[in-house]
Length: 530
Image 1 (tube, rainbow, N blue to C red):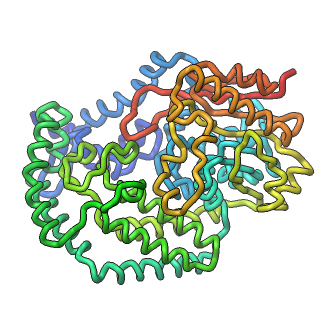
Image 2: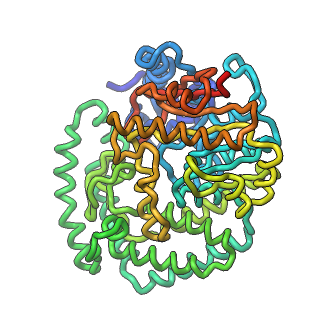
Image 3: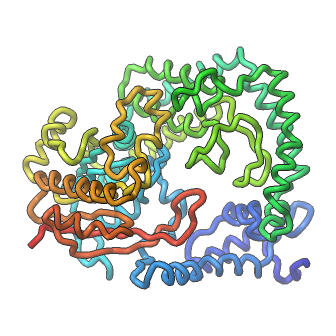
């Protein structure tokens, strides 16, 4: 049934209405996304796109209030919705260097800033840190705490058992020679294009994309197909399998015609198993070009850009990028995009995209950075001597720690039995030859969530806190972000000679591509036991 004419809105009008209703900026692109993915229907003709005001408001009403009420019912009335930061767009929660490289389990910068900055409100009634202080993150991960500390004029030390994590964190806070960085990006990109000029891979991908475009327009028209899926008018599994098989002969014909190698001869390493032969050769080529760079900072940041590139080029479906089930080397029905998609056969597109995006992001951050010190150390936070390690890599910060001590901690420890922090970047360890220290991780996935794993986790986190106390000021404040469903943190605090003085429970709205269920985490505020 068509909507009444008086109910119709242009995309521009819908953007304004939604912005007023939600009290935040909803762009025309946001509205177009809702149409493209079948959240609301598209009306109009002759290029004049219209949508139903009634459908638009019903969609936002189901999210706005409805989700908060539902989550409170599932997670408890002590849920602090103000700490969801749902007013921020994704571009703001992944601003500047925070999106230099994907990383599972990182917290958003607004959460760090909330506790580090000097504001107070009805929840945060006192200031814990000020400019010139030193904050420690003993589980540095991708370096979010260091970056936000820099923005606020606070010195920061990160520690991580993973050498690759430390590389990411340090790359985010390094000052760069932009002329050198830009010229090296140009040199490597030109060399890669030249390298590919003797290959049929780009011609193959061009032909394949044209065939897919024609096939998908016929069988998965946008936005009608997505809308019919959401209305239950199409059996997605059966229809997707049928069209996947229908396109396969076209793909096979192109593979044979262009002599494309879908797999490598060996699958003994991550790089062997999860990349096509052509992609693997291009990875090795670009890495060899990066090794020629003389400026170490430029070499490091472009190594991270290459890692980000190859992560996007793994032989898997778009829906399984975060989980990796089995290598996919043929075209397939993609439930994420609602059409037939393909694996990648060249890194060129993503290398060009990510190398230039990297340059843009470090330049954006440079406008915000302050004259403060930040360094991430590679080591075990249970035993590391922070001052000794800093004396080797950042003596000025080491001297500062000796003189004024660390004011406190803001960190998100690993969750017990949830993530293998080395394995999530296995491709980078293979390529760069970093030592893997999986057995030194606290609470890794491979140890599970049984009784022994929980006891080991409790001991590990408390050991980190006890070691950190050697470098903390007497009036320290410790903030640990965790989903403590096993109620381990009271015991951890006790073993560390600390007490929990406050808890802030917040909803986590965007976790992974697939998990949209009600979920919360708690920020535990700890101080020295009286």
